Length: 562
Image (cartoon, rainbow, N blue to C red; front, side, top):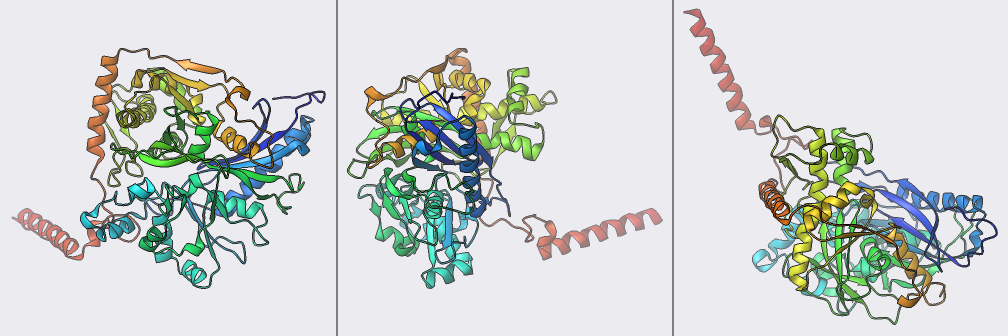
């Protein structure tokens, strides 16, 4: 948005929004919450083996520097004084695990992304140590089931499989953190006095954190055999952690000395950005995955229906923690990226909406995008993606429509679980995230849920939440979180347009497809070492098949000779 040089804007707050698919830096007016400028850089995901998802921590950091630099340039072009930026907040993809060397500042391995499935055998090995293989044994402390999703099992895999990390741990050089810790440590000086910290929301996604005491849990660290001295210090979501230091990658050094004073995992940041401060308020974020969070107040509520209990936010050192129930879906926006990058049936993500609009139906085709197994409410790592109900009539338009419908059906499943746990059904769904720009998706979502879907006109609620936490921190104090001081948000509403019977029929068919996606994969697939299964990888089977072929050819030859 343009701003004239005559406009007195007052204090500004920046937000680093480091997601799975991109990094952004956004600058907001602290008094009006208006977004003034931003810059975005897409992040490469690496898939070295089937089910493995990695990112380069140095590329993540470089993208942060680039976004900060470019946004500051844009603000200068708009004649907005960047010295008015009084604080910076950080919002990040959660669970993604980084280990680095405190002496060199270099990562010791690629970041293992939250979606990654390599730890399935680690999970199974851990479960064998538990009576009845009960994956919920630590749920009363952590709010989480033992799953490939959370950081502790990723760290366990790194210790088991990466010699360089084992050596660094033994020599006291290793630091562990989620992406927020890596960014804050690097921006506050790195190897030259960087601050090694995280906030309660990110810590609550590691499986090493007790969500009642709000501290690292020694027994959990012992169970996963992770040394506690690797872990960052846990702080609130809104306090000054440290100051931005001059960095060679930031040519202007413009933000040197600005406090980093807000930190929230991306889904908690969206909960704050959507101003879900009252018990029972909920939001759904459509990003790489899909995440529905409902504020449950100052006491953790344990789910009976496959949801997670997580720390929603803690907005100040002396403020109480607020908790949330969460429904997590692994694949939402990622399915659109898959249609673009893997199948090549669209050239851009925007094209999916156009293709879906042309047909307005999936024509009985159902798509279960269980690329990383199924998350809430099933927690079924053996599931894999399927497209079913195909006929000769099915074309790419129907598949595009089915992909969007899949996002909506998955949201319906976690909303149903949320309503059962909370006892009070939601009367409308507040939404945000990049996918909410897709109007077909939003209308479909209202139709499948049979309740209105409400989208704020400024969809950058994740970054807004991080900015609010940073601006409201003690010692910064430029952003008021009092409800009376907050600017009214304009919204777009999508009302259900189909009858509930049709919605229920389609949902029942979807559930049938989900059942068919389960039980496909085991943690130790037969493979020839390249991840490609081959009948010849079994020597006896290979010999049997070759000898059978020889006998058949011989018999045919003899028969032909008569």
